[in-house]
Amino acid sequence: DTGVSQDPRHKITKRGQNVTFRCDPISEHNRLYWYRQTLGQGPEFLTYFQNEAQLEKSRLLSDRFSAERPKGSFSTLEIQRTEQGDSAMYLCASSLALWAEAFFGQGTRLTVV
Amino acid sequence: GESVGLHLPTLSVQEGDNSIINCAYSNSASDYFIWYKQESGKGPQFIIDIRSNMDKRQGQRVTVLLNKTVKHLSLQIAATQPGDSAVYFCAENSGGTYKYIFGTGTRLKVLA
Image (cartoon, rainbow over all chains, first blue to last red; front, side):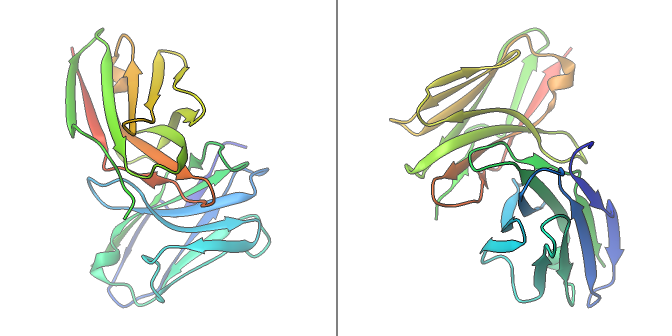
């Protein structure tokens, strides 16, 4: 296992379109996180899964955003009716336990035009 | 709201010198802290972590110091190298929540 994998690396979409990103965590990690990062800022927490259960969601995750982790392995993040303000780097991370380091993927850079 | 912030947005150091990157946190309930390094176009890379029951932890060329009294965290990099040039983030996690809260970051520039 080479780490957390995210696909695609880059996505350009027109405003109003839906997009979906995928994250494959490190195989034995049951904890998975989604973060959003804009230029010059630190990552902002979006949501957290423990196995297939979504246990925490940020207020940043509007009703246009939905995340799933159906079998407790990979996860998807969908953004419906994209807006220019959604342009950012979307990062996925996984960890083995609480108080354990979270390993990040390379991110998906979304540009909404 | 709770926040983690950094004192200096940009730090320039000569190659071979030691670097110190500082971080202030506001949540006194935070009990776990991580330093991440992020290079341009890449995801954050774990450097070192520390639990709140410790005040110092050392890794390879890096040391993290935690002062809970003043809610301050620092990352020391010994003999800074050009490959250390990146943005450094501190992140905190408070018991009972799952999320890691990140600060804005400090850009470290290593001068040849």
